[in-house]
Length: 406
Image (cartoon, rainbow, N blue to C red; front, top):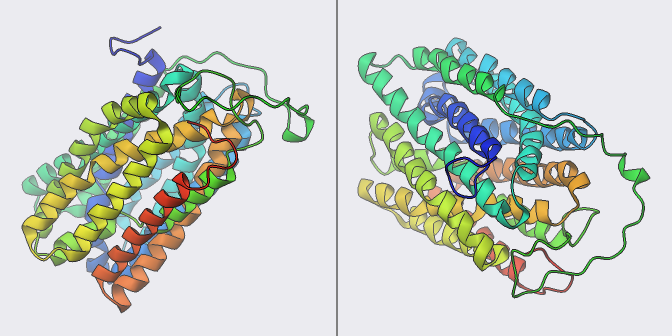
């Protein structure tokens, strides 16, 4: 059954709305964390460690949940449980008195994210046509970013009403989190027989690689054992330079953007992401996913070079707008490339491996960027991110060698 949005199924639409509310809850909190950590005695290094460890925790559980998803008859219970954990623990930030309290809450929050993400992404893949995978994932990510735009606006409104009451905002983040959990019960899923363990799969016969002229072909996947190593290596290299976006808020603050306007700046970023994700995902399905991903990484390198060279508050506003389309070019496309490289029975594991690789890359990136930021300079940390993104784009497009998904 299709929704009123062309090419978007009912499940894809509902899961998008679930993510919208989930991100309203999360992004009421995240833009305020840098200032909150500073008030608790932390800094860029603490922020990098907290956010990097939180994302690494999420990635480890994404890998585990991906393997579970290939063995489970139903995916929804795992998704519901993951959203429920995050919705329950996130408001506990209102009680934090030390940076390590923030560390603990963020890590448990990300356990919930890890448990839900791979099963949800596998359910998304099962709810979309094969030649519209990037579109489905990008629509979902667009709704996610729309929630990420609404969350800071709501936080700003609450802070204007109750100035300085950051802890109250953290507590009220429980409301949209609960709505996300409730909406999941409207998603329809047809139970399936659990897939056998990897060791019991018969050896597959080789399948032809897709024609370069038909990047969105619905022909069988090019690999059933796992995503291509070169694709994973490129993603890992890019992720090493893709430190937490919270550091960009610190950069904006250092350029002179007032703390009270940081949620508004975060909102601008996610409005652009929400507006561009779906159309850029559709474009990737039509023009080629690898080229779209490389273009996104190249644009990331350009934007991070701009952040490194910025010297005035207005530069931050322009750069946050310019940085927004990176998500539309990369997030859905990465997932579509990974999912289309394996058979349907291996999608959960493939998504888990992808999330594990990108998550631990993000841990290293955030810690590395925080160290360079504090001990060298913000410009050096941002310049390093730009260089790694450019190198990843070159690696993705160079030496095609083994067949790659479109």
